[in-house]
Length: 147
Image (cartoon, rainbow, N blue to C red; front, side, top):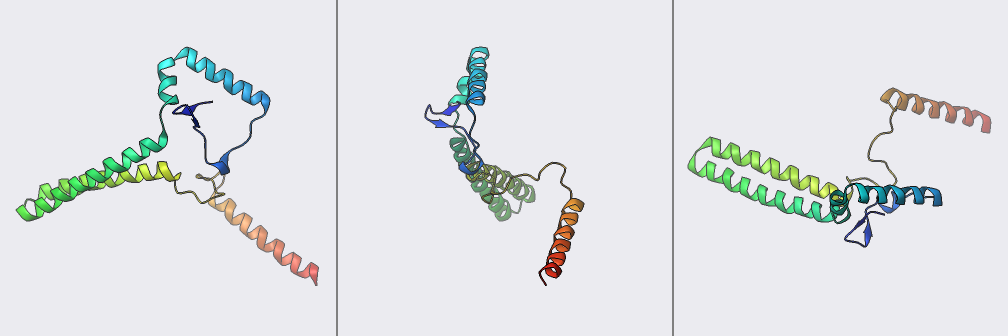
């Protein structure tokens, strides 16, 4: 399996893990061996890249950009140079966006436990409404069946 720093697996959170069958495990190992044989440099990069470390780096660099942007914003206000203030604001916004991406990487995209990060394909708002009305209708029928 792909491992970060040789000991931790690069896998989804515990709620998202699905056990693999023996056949699937053998196929995965064969794919990994082929990847290592085909492109050892890429395999080394993937093997020793820890997403948590990357997330922390993004948070720190984003924080530094926010501080730099704030300094430029305040400097532009004190010197009455509007374009320096605008540049500072843009840098602050870029830094906050970068830090937010790092937080999402660390936290797991702000998922609530038991929910998927994206809506299933093929689901539309109309289909959700149809499901809602079907549940209402089912409750209505149960009410009269119980009486």
